[in-house]
Image 1 (tube, rainbow, N blue to C red):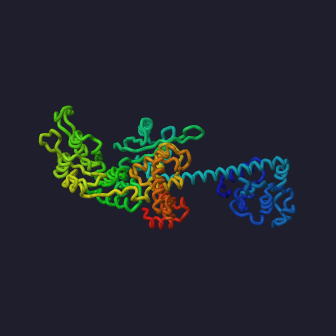
Image 2: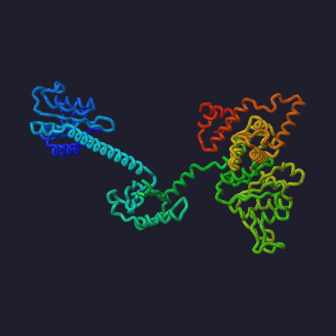
Image 3: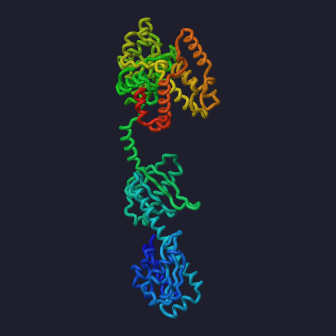
Length: 596
């Protein structure tokens, strides 16, 4: 804060005061450099007052006005070089303050008897006037500093706006552009900033306002730029001051550029389709790895596993990870449709092929799947006579509708089949065709039961709990230790499906902040007691019902990682939840086979 920054204004004030009081005026800064002067002092403007500044120093030091009625004789003048021989006949000075800080001093000087009489005729009034002039100078300096801050803020805003990838402009209530960043000038071909006032942008603004009122997000508008129509995504936001809209901020994104960026990003950062399959146990990881590797091929996949192990989830993930993901995924459970209808559902039928047949016939699922994926669930239960027809479709890559009179229709869908049955055993029993088995058994993937991957049970339980509690609006955040033990040691004949149902039941029953054992279905608790009794009678299981420290540590880490993953956080947040360092977390993840 220096008076030198407003030297011209200070000089104007000095002249004005001198003309009113008809005495000489001198104004200096805190370094006692003369900033303004009149009469005899004007020649020394912007020079230091060396040897002539003692009274001003005294005023600045005390922060109070100083009145000298006898210059050259007053004790406060003694250090001055002109003490005893001063040309002045009187002096009054007053400090200039800004926000409690001294920024300078203003002095009134008399050099003859007439000026002396005017200066001391009414000292009180003169002092009051001088203090008002000091305040005026202070206000001028404050206005200048505020202006500088404002200009600095505007310059920062300009730099930030020009660095944005979006086009941004502000318009006033008269539909004139106030400011536009470099991107806006480029998009809208605006030219230089000083030409904005002459631009007629009413047509653009009308189109933007109409689209803003008519559309939901994301909002699009077509603007004519240089005789060419261009499409933009846009936003329109008001700038409100004192309850009134003063200006509008408009942002624009070129739709072609947005689409191209999305295409580029999509090519390199494709989402993992298998992320929905929860679990880090070696057995489920092996199944996911095989599924990932075969997703891009057209080979037939056979998913084998008990009921509830996630066979359809795997089938959908394989489809999503393939190049067919933009095509249909069609699923059919071969046991859910009556035998007499299954054939027409799979292969379709022609008009008049049977009583009640739809006019014009009907496409079968092989046709409807197009170039997508057809998932045949519970293939092991398919009737024998249909197995032969399915084999021919797989071999010939064509399907014949029921009543089709020999007309073949090409099929391009990929086949993923699934079963909970032992197909080789079914072949031995004569219930499943051996040739169809080998046609399906190109890429077999075994999905482990939940009891064969117990390390995933609590991870899955936590995922189910979070989803179910959120859906039902219940503030439940975890499981008691007893509940964890019951969940961990249960055999889960229904696998993940059974686990999800048990968690939903418990969430509905629970009134506490965590799931207690009493909220689990009675069958779970009874089964656990039965197992514990059996183990006790057989002198086994010293630690039945308990988790080892290693198991508890692994489960705690898996649970923390899941919570962070759900809210799309960083691994460091999981380390904070567990109270360990980032390095320790990664070491333990490697030790327990938990994926990064």
